[in-house]
Image (cartoon, rainbow, N blue to C red; front, side):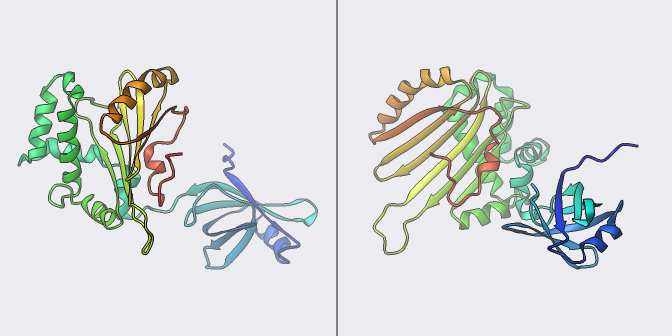
Length: 291
């Protein structure tokens, strides 16, 4: 018989809960279900199956709402009880947030390929799939596909499941999109996060606009780009997996950006191994990734 892996543990000292010894005896060798109700500065609040609340010391890497399977183990000399987490299930994501939780690139690509009535974006997809890889080097193809995909994902007729998510984000001045790359089958999608930051009422300051994106390349690996636009100029952060390639690209990129006629603050940085994808960074208010 396999021993379940311990995903974490909590502690209920006898000094903190007079009923801890009786609870330890009742739970010894038993497994109970509980819901992580709240996170406190010095512990957690659990809701048991009968609705009772139980406070325990310690921390767990699970969000509130998670369902936990806990095994009770008495501490030595009646010191209390240890609750070992042997199973954890995170709370279900709201359906409205499914695009953020599960991605939307693959569903969009499947809809465009299977739709009986070809939309303009579907027709463009067919053209891109028939073209050779040189199309990925054409800025016009990138621009047209990017704009068309964003419009399709926000359109209830084309994307009934995702459009409500994008309409809600638009009201908040943000935007999250995962866009498939038809010229790179099986590759990670282009991920794009947009946010605006207006000046508080009565404050004489300019509005700020930020765009973050990540895109895979066959030769460079994942490339991440952050752009922040203010009236004073443009801040640019470029992250590459290979620092040597980052150093080589820096001067040419900065020269091209300066040709736009605005001051540019550019930094080319190495992308650390194991960095979470852009989806894990999106959603902050504001997103603090520019450094």
